[in-house]
Length: 213
Image (cartoon, rainbow, N blue to C red; front, side, top):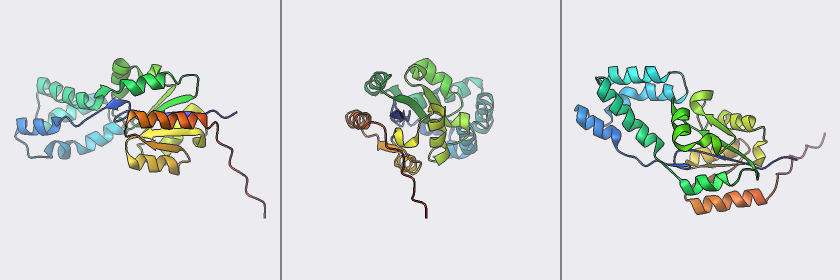
């Protein structure tokens, strides 16, 4: 029998990640115009999100493009990771831990090189779900439909049996286009209620074959 499955995003869902203003603070510190950090680093951030550049190369490019010595580069990257990692959404994390045995569990995250190691150390997501699919490891970001196909393949589940939870409307629409159920995260209570409804509904019926003509 097909199993129900729940797949969650990390940033904005399992992690609370408000804008800390770290880029603007560094622009002021370095005497740069607003938006200059992102403009100078745009292609590096993109490469890091799909894994075509490693952490060492990221650090080197940060130093070169922003004119930072080793100490300031380290401080810059610490501020980047502080916003990226945010703080844990403990209510939702504890709830998901309690789902083990009731359904298949996965994570699908647009990420950055170094995220797996840091999130494993800080939050232990490997002990929360069965499979974590990071964009920097598969080279594909949401809302590309292939990202949703990848997490279903990793969990060996059918898309129609999966509920995907994300805080971005574009990713919700893409998950539905990929055949998954989807829920836009707004708060823990509504998300938990939606997951419970998904699990209580039981496995989805297989698609009906079209009549031969």
